[in-house]
Image (cartoon, rainbow, N blue to C red; front, side, top):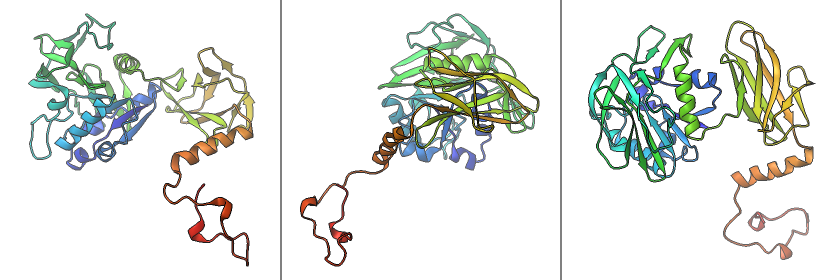
Length: 362
């Protein structure tokens, strides 16, 4: 999964950037990628460390402790994707660009315009994009019609070891760069070329295919896989697993006022015994592909409607291993005084009552 860093500090300081650069407000959903959110608090506690990709959403204000936490995350093997507005200010130092200590690229120009060109690289990123050119300025219209991508491009220059250039502006300043740190890497997007979106009633919708191609290429190169799919961008699909582990659930939502007919799919580790429409409470036909995808074809979605499907894969007894796994995840064996279970004494009045000081997990 992808973690989106949604800065509570930047929003408290009245920054509008997180509202305009958060891809979790409809855009990742239309591309059928799952995401979770984290603020500075979760980042500093290391709760994002298990996730492979941390995608910024416009953390305009960033202090040294946050930069250090991201560096620790990257050093451990994560990938952090910084935008043109990431880490521009410290909370007490405007335009200090503290993020440069992490990305390894210094800001040498602002308000960049013109075309960008992707270069060949050895980073396993955009390897098929060498020589491709794009207009360097994208589009990000908020609900008031303000374009936060206008005049936002940065010209960058490498200033640290481990940096690689992925794309350049016409004047050869860096538009997209990468830096290896430990087991992970930082990707910095100084150009807004990839963004073509508009806030429509609180949901960001794409105005072109470039963003889909860029984000999909980026996440694919970073090893992020989809767990659910739909044949339409207006239908958002997501995979869930029931608490007892007996079923995978596919939830799909038509984020459109008009009816849509499309296929929906879910990735499963094994073919199910049956697929059940959880709303109609009846089995539905499905196709199981050799690649693990289970597909339900020709699903009719009314406007703003939800469909839910359950993949029945196991019998009731199989829930025991899931139940025990959950217990082991949240409960730990007692370390300390060992109780002699063979010689535990019970009160004569009630042999089923165990004195409190003699009680312990075995």
